[in-house]
Image (tube, rainbow, N blue to C red; front, top):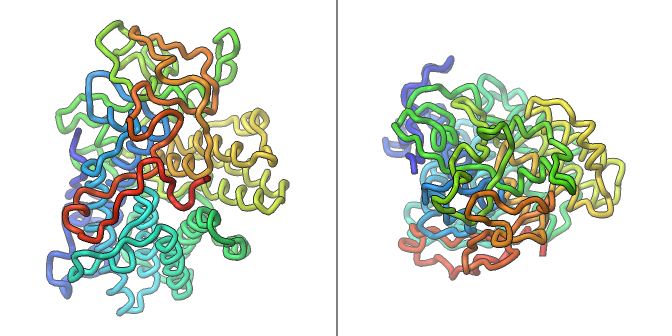
Length: 502
């Protein structure tokens, strides 16, 4: 595995004063608190979040949502491919989010509040909410009400619903103080823009969490208020324009899986048969029936100029030519690829879900169509109308319509959110074929009858998961278990998070 934490110390941007803050190993909390300012810390928060969310969490989510599969010759992510997550493996994410992202957000919020800098306060609160949401979506229960207090070495774990409700309230409080024209200190998400962009991002974050919270309580009035305000993102929220083709300065996923600047040529991540056969279904004669135009934006073709995906849970063998890296598709990536925090397509899918639950099929259809159109726009391809005609919104089973199309859209932008939404909505479901039924030593897997829009039990699946089930939650971080006496007993790998379909 390549180094997971980017060291970005000499990136030259228009914001040249931020050079040292692009080094996410620089911890602004180490100097005396009086010597640091919010503009010194916010860029580091963004880079820490990007390095976690767009790298390891993206990879983990990609395997668990069957967007990615494992390439023979390495063992780096074979456990993920088999739906396995260990306490050791999750420790990096835990440490990065708590010790760097959240601790620094706390410092920014304290300083910005003291200075009545409400635009910066909102930015830090939004990123804090984002990080806590990720932690809940992984573990279910996390320290929140007692978290981030250096004097408390054993903060209690709060229920995920409590955390969601708490951070939504924090967003409401920050939004009430920040005007659209308020300034925000140096940052990479919306460089040079005022707080209006952060208000729209904060509202999108609220919409996401409220939609998930709706599994437990009626939040329709709060969602309607966001819609009525009309302050949702008009474009993808992304960190872009700050990456460079130099060691330690590349976009996180590229740096981990594609860059050779560190001397590695190892190939780990390839396409999964589930996503490829959904985006390119075959007819009864195994001919291509339809090809989603986003395929070429999301995936590279193999050496035969074809889109081919592998089965989950295999490390294969050396038999045959089918296991050569060139046989499979790889994700399309670049050194300057954006880190998507939330896309316009995601926002539209959440709105479609809201109206579907209300029984307003017309508005739900409108937003479902807009979500697909936005996904095609982000991918930079035409053909949204034809895709919508092929997969029209089904109001009688909106979970299936939204679930499968959101999974496809997120496969090219944010695999962790795809994994979360598959668990929450219950789609795609598991199909009739298992990995064991499809696997062949030659690499010429028996996939002709693979049902588009379905998942499959990995060829070798973790015994903690079993057949036709997803990994629903992760074991608590090894770091927390070793240091926090309040760490609760693990509820089990197949116990859903509070927002999941039951």
